[in-house]
Length: 58
Image 1 (cartoon, rainbow, N blue to C red):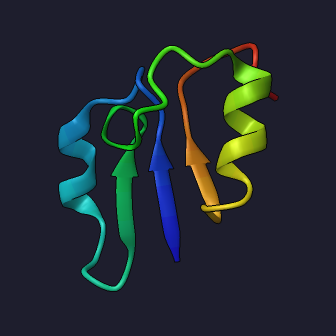
Image 2 (image 1 turned 180 degrees about the vertical axis):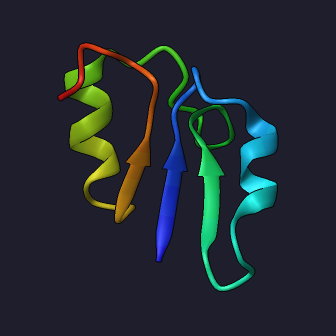
């Protein structure tokens, strides 16, 4: 499983995932600053889960 952490999620959260799960941050991918729609479009091709605290993403 591949998990993407949005820029509003603390980076240290990645330490709580098991080794079988690949966790990357938006900043690591170079996607920091992308608007929600654009982020969702690019992330869906690379990740199974997007973890965010953004209330505007249902």
